[in-house]
Length: 301
Image 1 (tube, rainbow, N blue to C red):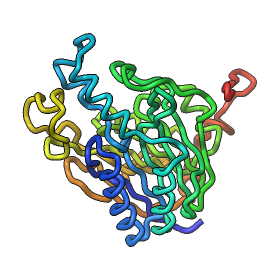
Image 2: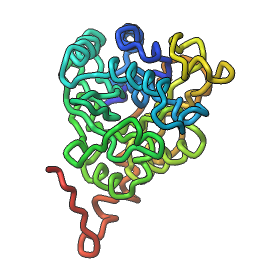
Image 3: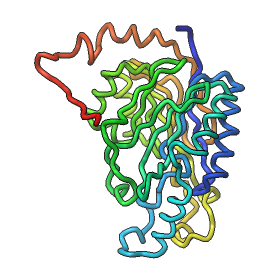
């Protein structure tokens, strides 16, 4: 396979506004297409925004608290049904731009939300999804738990593509389940890519001998809606998320980034053959595995 251009969209959504955020996404997808990008990755729950207030609002610990309920209601009302009109719109945008797309969403299923990754082909087809297996710490107030049926790796024109969300990159067996599916490209979706999260992303690239696109969001006061008391009462103007996105090679080395603070398309040219070169020394699902000693069973039911 010849070299290809990949990118991370380190941009802010119109926070808790699904339609306006979709319009922003469409503009960046189109711009990526103009730049010849073959794979574009958006950050964790970018539609319609990561619930950062879980960790910064002093009111979050209050029981039966109307301002918290109001923010959750806004999030729920602006979350995504899969499949549905939003996935159709994202598929059309990917098709027009001629690229493969990874989008982090708040997925709505019945009365429950999930932290979900969506994969779209350059023909606009929804190829699959992944639901975060275990929401982390305060996130358990917002999202349900995913299951093994969505430990997904999909075939794209850019190569085999998978992804995990945030602290799933510290779940050894989840990582191995993904490595066993022979990823060439891995989307590591984070709220913001802090230093230790970049460590996890680089480690994943080295262990899996794959290219990792670590995607983080930028977010400050100007991106927030007005009229929600919980958000209006937050101190300062942020930023509450500062990006930190990076593109990493299969030896764990940085190819592009990390970039802090700016809204931009972080792009890089990659050579897929480098993944083959690195597997000469380490292939955790091949010659560096010991199936006579260790076995992994994934419940995909």
